[in-house]
Structure formats: C-alpha cells, structure tokens
Image (cartoon, rainbow, N blue to C red; front, top):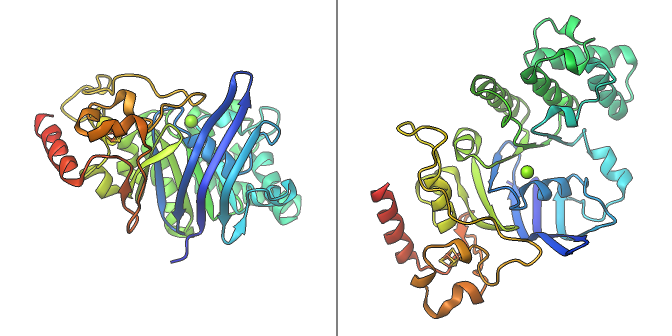
Length: 338
Ligand code: SF4
Ligand code: MG
C-alpha cells in the first residue's frame, strides 16, 4: 500500500532570541490509510512541532522547514497558505489536549461544528446544523438536538473533548492528528474517547497520528510506534516490536517508567535520570548520550562523537551504536531485574 502521508528528512528550526532551536532534525516516516502511528517521547522531543508543521500551523516568519511532507501525493512543505487552508479541517485535522484551544467561547457548539462543514462544502445553514447534530450524535453527546445550541462552557470537560473531535471529523478527514487528546480526562472518559477514535477509523479508514508521552496509551491504540528523542526518531517498529522487544536504551527507560498493575501509578519504577536535551545546543553524537547508562559499552567514545544512523528495514529500526548482541544481552538483563 502506498503511504498516504510521507515525511522525508524533515527539519524544523526556529529562530529565537537565544539562537536557533532545532526542534526537529531529520525525521522521516510514512503512514498508510486506516492505520494509527503512535509518536511517543518526553515533552520537547519534537512530537508536537512535527505535527503542527504537517498542518502548516507553524509561524512562517520565525520557522525554517526543510524536507518533504507529502499527503496523498501532494507536497505540503512550501505550499501556499490557501492550499493548506483548504486541506485543514477537511482532508486533515487535529485534536488537542485542551478543547478550549479549538473551541471559541463566543459561539454555540453547533455553530462551530456547522461552520467548519459549511466552509469546506458550501452547504446551507440548515444542512450545516443537521450535520452538527449528526456529528454530536456520532461522538455520543446525549440529546444532540438540544445540546447543539449550548456554548462550550455548558459542556463538561469530557463532552467538550467530544465536541472538538466532532468538529475535527465533520468533513471526514483522511488524516487525523491527535496530540495528547485524552491526557486531561479521567480514565473512563479517556477509554470512551479512544474507543470512539477506533470506531471512526474502522468506519472511514482514517489514518491517525497519536501523540503521547504515555506508553499505556500507545499499547491501546497504535499499530506502529515511533519513539522521538531530541528532535529525532530513535526507534521505529510495530507496537509489538517496540513494546515487547525494544532496541533503544531510551525506549528501555520509557518502558521502565511505565506504571504497571503491581505498582502505584504515580511512582515511576525507573524514571530516566537527567532532563531532555536543550535543542539550542543539542548534545553531540547521540543526543541521548548524557543520560544513557550504556555509553561505556560502545568502543571509541562513539556515543558522544558520532550520530548513530537510523536504518529502517521493513519498518523496523533504531539509532544506537550498540551491537545487536549487546542490545539483546542488556535488554534481557533489564527485563530480568525489573
Ligand atoms: Fe546510548 Fe550510545 Fe546507544 Fe546513544 S548510541 S543510546 S548513547 S549506547
Ligand atoms: Mg506536546
């Protein structure tokens, strides 16, 4: 299957008062229709920036974007704003952690969902309203014919999140980018929203990018996983490959800090020591080297001097100087001691 979305050697650099921030530095990945790619990493790893850039929502004056972003064969990097505007909310759309960033407090929920539909389809106001009610029904809002006239503040947090999803999906987008959309919600509502996204994907074949720092969420929703660190992909594979046979020391750290059933949620078992790297002055070589426990196992100080290449074979790969054999041994040890 041809990739529906293809990112090639994407670089996103911003100028700030302190210098150039290399938020994304040579990222490549593909996504086919009907599949969900989970992008996981700590804050500042470049996951949100990547996705805002795909949608063309970055500030063009302070941001330099290099590389290629093709959606259904169309190049988006450098495309005119008019072209992107036609695609956003229509062929591709995004849901965020906080619905209030997408919903205006001054207009009713129905009006906002309907206007997005009218903008892209040119339908009548009555048709737009009917469509808004249909969407609210689809995302499980009770009494949609009544609630369509509510303002966002009249909705609970979970309902606002559903309304935002309804708005993002009103034009049946072929690509949906979800940036931590359930982080602020309680576990029950979170599970309902994940189910809703899965249903919609089954029904419409939507390609989904799901951004999160939570591997539990990845385990629930993703087909494939991309692990980002310091603006780069450090590991890529199917969900099963990454979660049950991770290859990169950073992924080992993430998995080690994942709460499990036998441990209280707030107590990470093995939080990764240290902080994410500054992207103003990123570490040389492997960007993870200041926090990595395995640098001494690599000969010749390569970890701090040479960038480990990411070689992807059949969708699987990681960027680390350790040998395959070392990786097997170290991961077996870690898994045994956990
Ligand atoms: Fe650790 Fe070196 Fe591998 Fe980077 S390349 S993850 S520093 S062992
Ligand atoms: Mg983010």
